[in-house]
Length: 630
Image 1 (tube, rainbow, N blue to C red):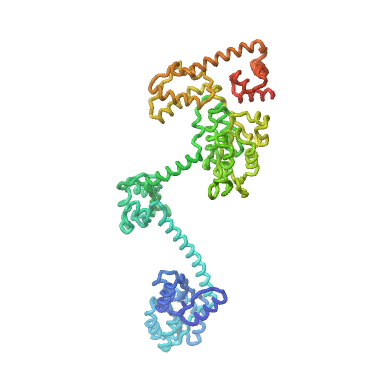
Image 2: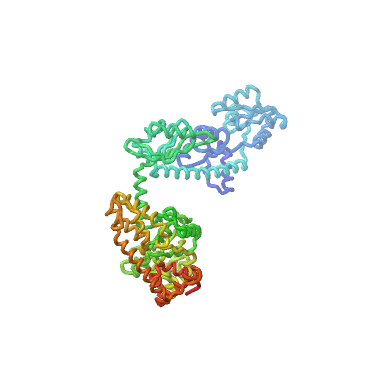
């Protein structure tokens, strides 16, 4: 906005030289304000002007104004020109233009009056007074020059040079970038406020509502016009807001009732220079939160992608079991593959879930699959997924496999010993390449998954038989945990009975059976081939049949009979072995003699030897390894 035509001409030259696109319009003071207003309506974002015109536009319009600064050099140049017409000079203009002019008197050997104007209407009166005071030459802007000529006074225009204009243009460009960035942020902020499901209310330092979003209007059932500028305590519980204002600390997860609606609200103070200048309150309908949480939990649990157990859930006083838990906690801190061995029902999955929940992957998915439970023809597509059209009946768009679903988490391959040889090859490749290819696809999909496998089989024996790949076994067997069967940690049986009975009865809302000492002795004597799972089944039956009643030995006849049979079998085995077993040396020597002789008697059938000796296959494997017997 050039107050005079000469400035317009110079501005156009500068714009051309700098290759900047800008409108150039001539307009002084009020005319300049009117022209600037029209330009802003057309979409102009920043106005550049100088002197009184810049001040007038800034006072009357909201858009930013960049002023072309009148430099001391511009004033000196104009005063030097004015000196030709007289040595008593009046410098006319707004204070920001003329300030400091009088300090040039001694340098230029002239007398200078600073003639300040505060509005365009002052110009004529100020110049007329200057003439009466014998001022010979007027130096000023375009309006001042015009009035001076009308009064017959010499006048010189304070012109702006190219440098001042280019500086103003650069400042305007920088301001435009910042302004657009702030405008984008403001639009983002507005979109967040308008479309978030949370109600948001902001207050000023006095506790009056300064901002309300649509969600808040909906939850509270009141419009913005009614809530704005009202004390926030009129629409929200006063107690919590007062505590935040007094203490200056956030309050999170506060539950309050407003009419028939229960809301969960967070109150956060806005603190500037250690002073509370307002509060931001966010809140949601508690029912909505409950629905969302329920939906998420249901979906995750139905898919089995959540590990529920932790090490604290494992009930034991067995030193062997405690040692395994300590090792498992250490294993949890690594990403190496783990094999968990143990008989059916001994708690392998509980241990694996605990490892996941103690690891750095605890926030990722936990995907469990029983390799023995899925038909062989479906197992490949379940594990690795498939592409559209991979086979008849394939879902449109294909399907993610369990390995993809376990990305950034843990996949638990239960009963790994049942995995077909064909899939063992693919699993080995996944362990090596950290990537999968879907059935019917050719795209390599990188995955970040920790593999934990479990089995009740002797995998070394399966490798020897050719049923399990040796290279896969070594890849999986980086870390190993062998869970002892329940019969090898009988000190845990009373603990487990107490814990499981309480859990079963609480879930079924039944009274607690009372286990007598005689019945407990029988339960502790039993070998529990089904381990904890079998124990839980027996206790569930007792919770139905003996609710709030004492449990005697006759109530567990089936267990009692098995215990008696087991005692007889042990006695018979001892008698049959007495003739062939030579017992001498220390306890370990005698144990080794008994086990080796038994293996000879059963022709090295390890499964049969375990039955005769009354020990688990894991225990036998461990002892033979210790003695270097294959």
